[in-house]
Amino acid sequence: MAKKILMLIAPDQFRDEELLVPRQLLSEAGWTVETASTQTGAATGMLGAIEPVAFDLSYAQAEAQKQAYEAVIVVGGMGSPEYLWENAQVHQLLQTLNQQHRLIAAICLSGAVLAKAGLLNGKQATVWESPDALAVFKSHQVTYTGDPVTVDGRLVTANGPEAAEAFAQAILTQLKALTPSG
Image: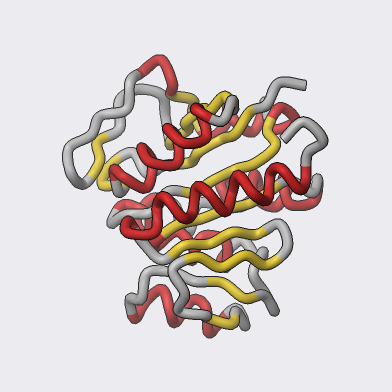
């Protein structure tokens, strides 16, 4: 099986380095990284990064290819609450991959996506420390660690852009432990 990772982003206002840093480190480690958003086309980051069309999939296309992914990473940023927190298609994809024992990761405000998808109930996790994100954690019985990166089983969360490199390293460590060819 090809070593593939899926990164989910908001179509607007995702946090650039939360996409670019992990994608680069994972690619350098030999993983094929694909990016999905609400639709195909260009997505604009908070700092102006534009994701090339060649890497874009819609969430529906990613759902159709879900068996191909060893991990899924939900990228944060200001677009996450608007486009990802309540997105039933994203929640279903995360739940399915979780049931298939895949690695699930989220950074920044997107830790709330995992909570809203029901993946963090009774787990330890971190998130960007905003009142709304912390309220989501509380309402889903998530133990907020406040750490830059938190690993709880196959779940990896990070609190923001400053943790992007450590987040990617934690994902790589977990992938090596979970996949024979990791």
